[in-house]
Image (tube, rainbow, N blue to C red; front, top):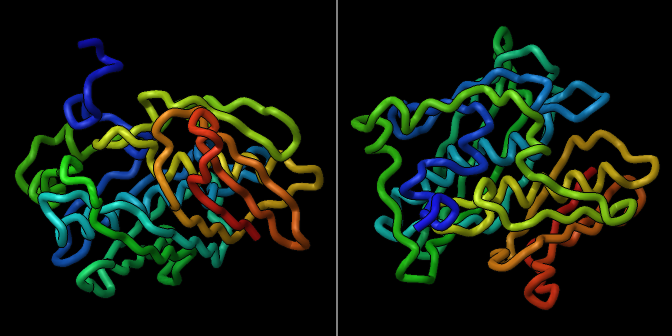
Length: 261
């Protein structure tokens, strides 16, 4: 078995592990800290990407949601980012993920992000999770790993390359981006991580003529990208950009809808 064939569970890497968020348990919450570096920011704007906030919230809240469904892993249904104050490069950010409600089917969560030196939230992300319907999609308790696991499993390094290099997307046309299903984008059950889907949607919107710096990002996850490449197509609609993400290698099956404002 080659390294590319090894499950993400064994290799301990993945898209979110390369975004520099370090997490620890705090009571019933997960908290994380990260440095806002240029590699995580929108080029030319020097502010943190909403897609990075979404990916961090997916880690903080997804791990808590999975605690409710173990041994089955939780899948992300939707994540909604609201940036209250732009988060500039050079700051340090603190995030807290919590469960709002768990029902028989769905778990509702919220992650709040503040920058050092301020008590007011700079951004918040609400999300919904559901247990995977596939019995083979099992996970270990991340909370237990944080408390008792090795340091290497919970410490993530600040990225030294732009996260778009990890995505390795190519421009097909203005508003259209495409990325292959490569190992660095996969999660523990070998599907493309939600943060990577959000990033390609964001990139598609940013490639539109007269693109804006988004302060809101909503993503609805409809199905996984199992073949690839994934293709994101953005259309401007007034003050919004609507993006469809499809699995181009699987008859263009719709994988996600994103809306940026």
